[in-house]
Length: 369
Ligand code: UDP
Image 1 (cartoon, rainbow, N blue to C red):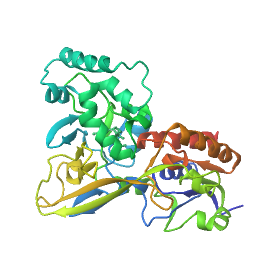
Image 2: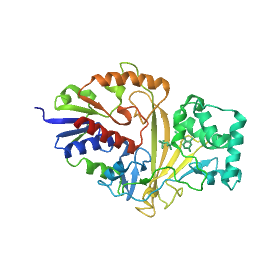
Image 3: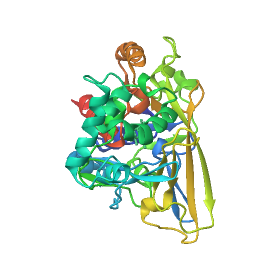
């Protein structure tokens, strides 16, 4: 009989949900994390009363009723709705792509005029089946929007030409022929009041948590503590990169506190030209409607980075080449009978937070079935 039923590697969203459900079912869970804090990349902390999203903006949104009911047990959500501003060389556009965007771009005022514009631009380049992100983007919104709002941002974000990127990435963003700036097509959206760290701490309340522990460096000894392992780190690292390294995209954040009440007037401003080195600036106070010191504001510039082993991986590169390497790692993972691989890194998937929760709830169901 081992001391724990589950050793959960990673105190991010997947690990916290798994721990919460299993603890509620009477299992003993030990959650460990390499970092000195819980909540993974959703981690938030307070600065001058402002909740700061340390690893980039996290806006909770979902269409999944069960997931929404679940998170609401651990936090109260505000009514924040993301409407992003795009700054292209000083010209301001609304995102996602909607009638405000098209009006600013072409002076059109009706959906018919906007559609006619996009259709003409799409037909001028003759794309039948979009094969890459560039073709997909032009098919959806035409060349002008592609050139001003997509190309530069995407090439900075992913470090590759839009012709060498999978089409699905741009389909994350809605295209609407209505005057609606909501970034997401989700029924439910908001930010946990007081931040994600509190929400995750509430989920982890019944489990034992140890921070600053490197699982892979102490694997044998840690594995000995529990009957099963839930691993939410990078799947290729788990197997010591033995089939080669998967590619990720990394980020660098530059955060500063300014002695002014309002820096940019919105939580997220994207810089969609190719030359500005950052992709976006986050002004954290607007996630909670200006809470905190009224004379201060905290902003973060986000710089995409090439990932090399040892850097923090933020985004999987879900293209064909990495997809087939991942499939080989997945085959190895299937042979690890006592290990569950989960989350953005464990499953190498560009998951949103609600999808991670859904995957964790499903993993719990299949483990207890
Ligand atoms: N994107 C873009 N212009 C923008 C914002 C996003 O072209 O101003 C593209 C870009 O390729 C990005 C993708 O849309 O990687 C998905 O954007 P999202 O905001 O969902 O990215 P995340 O917040 O996950 O980084």
